Length: 239
Image (cartoon, rainbow, N blue to C red; front, side):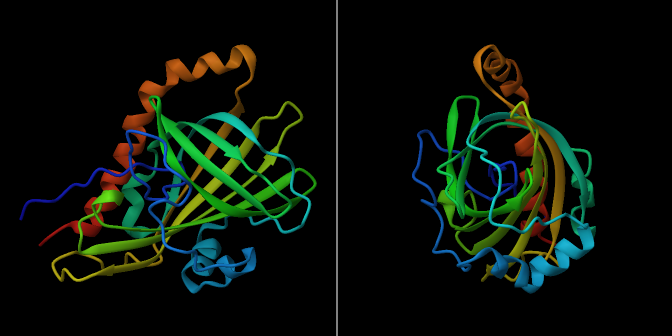
């Protein structure tokens, strides 16, 4: 039967938040987080297995570097679990903002061709210029770009280092920690615990460097759409 496609954006780290015609509040489409501290992310069985399989670094500590700012990201998906192998090599390009950083938490969001996508709050740990950001998004229904009979929980980890000029090098992973559906035709086998990992340079946009965004944004929509189109196709594929 014909495959179904649903338009979802890729919050660089693929948090399954939606395209929006206006800016939304943080977590406007998400339910309350399942996690109350960073360690609980890693203790989740799906996340633990994905971290082990992907070998993504996780940097503990209570003194992460200051990261607030707007960045232009440039990278690609470099690895994935078996079901998402087709994502490897797809570009990760976007305008990314980190903000509201405290000693334990940080928020992040992304802009696509002038459209501000709803951000999300997360935890942050780290030390000696290295950091790990922990985020989560529970998404369901048409507002999240999903059919009404399915919901997803996506956990995101982003680990990296900050350079003296403010730029970052980041490795991120998106993990589907939970999937719920009442439609038995959806191909959900093996989806829970599946992941894809990307690596990207985050170039801090200040002064004249911020003009680069205008020339790169045309690539952004296509890169995100291609990634999420394949993810959702895997989930909603019908026999």
